[in-house]
Each structure stands twice: as structure tokens, then as C-alpha cells.
Image 1 (cartoon, helix red, strand yellow):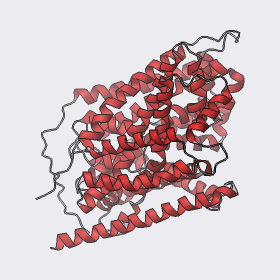
Image 2: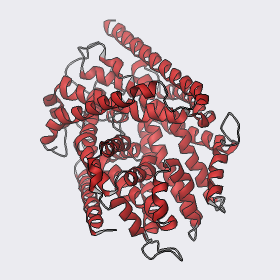
Image 3: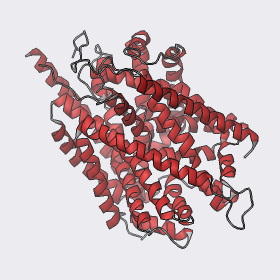
Image 4: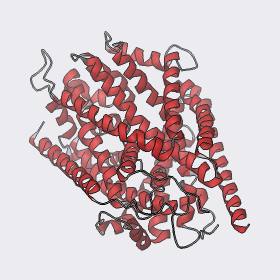
Length: 48
Length: 517
């Protein structure tokens, strides 16, 4: 593999892994709003 | 009293379900083959551009539209499209594509998925340690029941594993969103990733075989995938291949994400969840999928044969090349089992997702219980799975793959993004995307969703109609003996489109009568 190939691969992998870690950290650390009622309440009734 | 809708049990549940839908056979078989055929590292440049300009925006658009439509009690594209443009009474009919598209995928994908289960079994039993490359091809043909001169394909083991796979799929769907889909994805996705990481580590630590040049190592194989050939960037074919792979891999445009996100509460986040699911898929595809097939094939077959392997197609790579490689490793039957079982898990988390839009349509629009909807779906799907099995050697599977896996997806994606960005309105869509958000989406995506993504999608469609439409309609390149079979499956698809269109009409007529009563 060429140096360019290594650099490109490692940058791509690093970018993806960074986004994955960021997303999962944020997902697990943020509060879940499961206290909301199950019924939906969109204000406008649907037209047919 | 308003109907209580099914809900996801947790945020991670829907993330893994959407990621499971996206992570499929394409991540491990199609992606490395496409990358190697289209300039190696250079392919990744248009791939990332397409991911940012089409894939991620569409992902957010679908999550947003799905959760919005779910607020009106709709979980499938006809109802969700109608919710987004209530003044237009025809819009719901365009949503038919969001039911027929995934259903078309289902009726051939489950059969391919069952091959993975069958091959996992044969690997574990040590039956995949064959003498020559030809023997592996013959084994695959024996399993598929093709190549013996018979006009019908299909074999007893192939049918048995298909029945097992089909029943597992129907069983999971039967138990619903939380009890079936979420539960299996919570187990299958982590297992899949563990197996994939083990295989990647094994492949990347392979040394050069005896008598082979010292540089015939996994690193050399990675070079085949990652060394940039920048001249490839001038080719429109490479850009289209990259955009096509993004569609294929993220499950956008199918209607599956619309359905899954419709079971969210209106204050549940979609911005972070959408990005999490997409990045999980990209990790599976680029980091894991890119580090198995091509590096392993490079080590075992050498640089002279790697191009031919990359061009040999996904089935050949998965079911002929990889078993040969694993057979050459100590304890190869375990790696073979892990490889095929990993593909099976990737397949099942995708196939249960493409079943859901049709089941949800019956549940929501006709007030049929999930159990009854699944029974109806199971009977219809089982009957329509048969052509892909028995006429495998007649081009039926390839034709279904074209319509379900390419055509309907692009049409669906174009409709969704225009509907959300232009009809529903980008400002309202932006607010909707950020309702309950855990991540602020950079505002540049507002313009990408409104202008860039629809323009690129329309350009792809125009190019396709200009280049391919007539050839596809006239079945250019289809052998004369296969024409009746391909025509037959197209007529079945056409009839299915008309039938779902009529069902949409009946469902709205019924709703109108109920609301007037």
C-alpha cells in the first residue's frame, strides 16, 4: 500500500470512528423523554 | 378513544433497528467489490460526497417525515405522504412505491438470506472444505439447484433453509416492534459486529502464503482498495456507482425508515438518532466490510487475480471465494461459520425491516391486528417468493433486484425529499427535524435538503431515463429463453402496484366514512 493509501484509509477510518463514538456517547448520555404520553397530539386534524 | 400505537422500547432500540436495516449483505459483499472496480481509494471521494449530499440528508428527511406521519396514526408511505401534503388527494397514491419497493426486495432477499444460513450450517459441519475452485462453484450451483440442465431451479436443502429463514422472519414480525424487531436487533447487531471484528482481525493478521511474494499480505490488499487512482474521478460512471452504493447501503428511499420512525413519540430525537444509525452502517461498511473480502482474496489469490475476483459479482465473492479462503486457514470452518452467520444476521435485520411497511399499512389503514396483518403478509409473501427460487436461473431474481433495489428506491427518495423540502416546506421541515433534538444539524443541510439533494436525485433519474429506460423496458440483454419469466414477474409487480393503489383508495374512503359518521 502506498503512503497516500495509508493516509487516506486512516483519515477515513478516524473520521467514521470519531462520528460513531460521538453519536453513541451522546445517545447514551442524554436523558430519554420516556415520560411523554403515548398518544400523539398534532394540533391540526387530518383532512381526507 | 384514540388508538394506542406501538412504540419503541428505547432510543437505542430504534437506532439498532434502523442500522440493522441498513447493514446488510451489501456492506460486506457489494461495497468492496464496487470500490475495487471503481478506482479503489478514488471511489471513496465520490462515495463520501454522495454520503454528505444525498445519504445523510435523505436519512434525516425520512426520520423527520416518518415521525411526523406517525403523529397522524400512519406508519407507511401512503399515509405519511398524505400527512405531509393533505391538500393533495393524489399524493397518497405515490406512497404505493414505499410499500411495493420494500415488498419487492423481501420476496427475493429472504431467499438469498437463507443461503447464508445454509452455508453457515455446511461450514460448521465441515462440508465446505472442497478440493478445487470449481468444486466451490459446483457446490453453490448444487445448493441453488441450477446448472443441471433442468428448467426449474431449487434444491431440497435450499428449500429447507428457505423455510426456516422465512418462518424466523415471519415470527419476528409477528411479535411486533418492541417484542420482535427491537428485541432481535438488540441481539443480532452486536453479535454481527463481534463476528465481523473477529474476522477482520484474522484477515489483517494473515501473512504471505508459502512461496508467494513477501508483499502479498493483507496490507497489500488494503492498498488495492485504498490507493487513490485520481484519474477515476473524471469518470461519471464512478460517481454514479458511488451514489448508487450510498442508496443501497443506507436503506434510504425504501420507506423502511419512514415506517420505523413513525413509531417514535413526537418529542423523541431524530437528528442524533438518524446520524447514529447512518454512522453505524458506515462503520460496518467501510471499516469492517472493506477489510475482509479484498484483503483476504489478495493474500490467497494474489494481485493478478484480485481484479477478476472483484468483478466476479457479489454472490461469487461471498459464496465461492470466501469459503475457499476460510478452508485454507487453521480452524477455517469456524471462520466460515462466523462469516456466513454474520451475513445471515445482516440479512435478517434487513429483511424484517422491508416487511414492516406492508404490515403497518394493513394495521393502520384497515384496523387489522398485527397478528392478522402478519398472517396475510406471510401468505402473500410466501407465494411471491416462489419465482425467485424456482426461476433463479431465468433472470427473475436479477429483475426483482433491479426494480426493488434500485428503481423504486430512487423514485421513493426523490419523492420524499421534494415533498419534505418543497411542499411541506423546508422551514417547517427544519423545525420538525429539531423537535426534541439531541443534536443541532448544521444549517448548511437546510440548503442541501432543499436544493442540492433533489437536484442530484433528479439528475440521476434523468440520466437513467435517457440511458437505460428503453433498454430496460425492451429487456435488452435478457436471453430470449428468459423473456417470458422476466415479463411474468414484471406483470406480477404491475398487478401488485395496482392492487395496493386500490387498497389505498379503499382505506381513505373508509376513513372518510368513519370521520363523517
